[in-house]
Image (cartoon, rainbow, N blue to C red; front, side, top):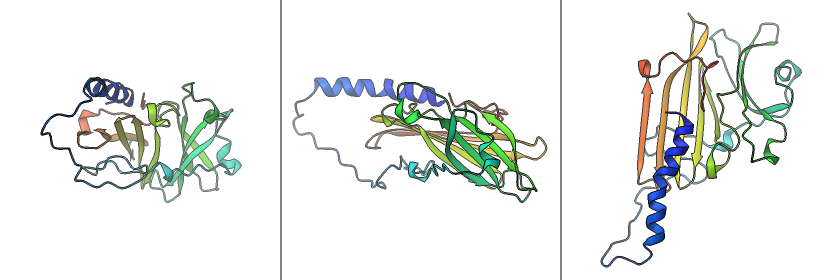
Length: 226
């Protein structure tokens, strides 16, 4: 399920609740107030009722100072927003996942400007090789609806990484898209997609997990989150 659909779902799902609330301001006799008996971590952590998606937007590195061996691959007019490092292809070298956003993006919240995802493999001579460049893999700065920036970071592990999405208003949607390296194809393919929907009090919660053949064969270089 794509994040673009997630935001449409959030708006449509919330509309009946909004209309109901506007037309029903008087209390109902003998009605007991609802109480949230579950506790949740404070701050910017989304629903983890089933512990499918757990992240914190503050974990983004926002590195602005990078060596020329890395910045040379950033497209003109863009700058590093986030980086995550791991051994992407099991060769014993530390590689880099780099997210680049357009310069001045924070001052212009009305335009939907896409961001770049760059996969850089480290070479033995302390240089990097660009093996993938995708402008559709990372949520844009205003794709999260009322939540603003929908990009929630990348979790990187050995030969795998997960791109995370978070957006909505009273109704929120989260997404986690995990890719794993294939030695035979020398590429990274989508192996798991998790989506969650929940109302702000988290009593109304649904999730969906897709793996294997349900996802098809989607390379990170051709993946689109839109």
